[in-house]
Image 1: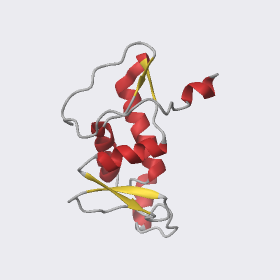
Image 2: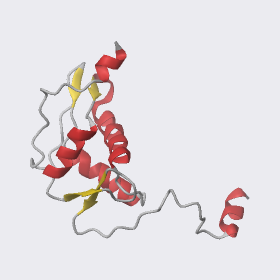
Image 3: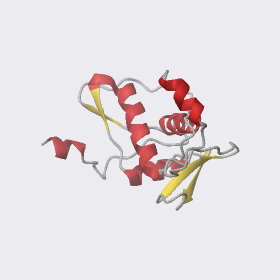
Image 4: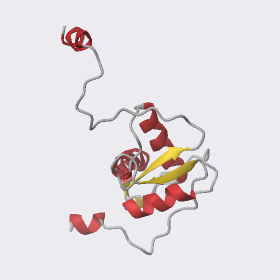
Length: 137
């Protein structure tokens, strides 16, 4: 079934996260399962930083799957569990896994990069009313 196809097989090993991150992954064969690499995770984390969103467990999972699916294209199926993603993050030297930050089970920080994240759960609007009025015009 379609649900079974989304299940992650525990015997499938993730690629070595310490592999060179500049290496371009090859396109998968038809029907092959694509696995995210350390490079995929770093790209996803950096894109979340650029969007000023904390790379929390679930948000990072979603972004990694989106980017991996783009790489896999129509020929493959991208899959990774939250626990596999965490293990991959822990193996990436550029990343630091942090427990229980901002109400999440875990999140990821880029070593040496300042954190400037929007608090999406804060109901207070920090932008002036004129900004919203200008956008509506």
